Length: 153
Image: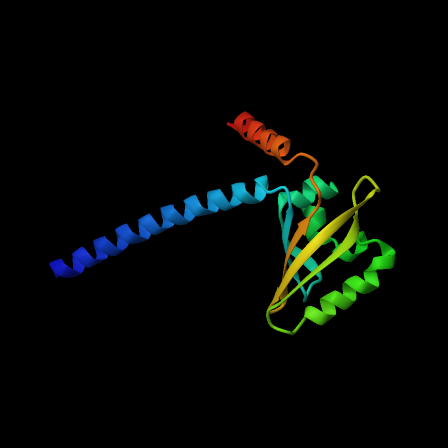
């Protein structure tokens, strides 16, 4: 009986440590996505919506998180580039793990278009998307993020 109690205590301690480690990792991942100057998203092929969009999308495009997750992103692609976007999506759907790279233009909330360079991995019914937009001064960008974090404390 005593050995069983020791195993339960050991398991409970290990579980508590694992939860603390998972919470720490989650904190670092949130910070990483907040600080990242690029755009990272997960797109559902079933709903044709982002189910996750990093804060880089908000900063670069100017849309709120709610807009990013509830609007079909094809609405923001320059109209003459939409057919090519659908063709890329269709070619990736249902082919297991496929990676593709392409460039297109997204409409920002201020009415201007911005050029984005995309790298996309298809897995199951999701597209894992990474988009780059030239940031004029990455060091200044990181300093701005660190200042914002310091003011939150």
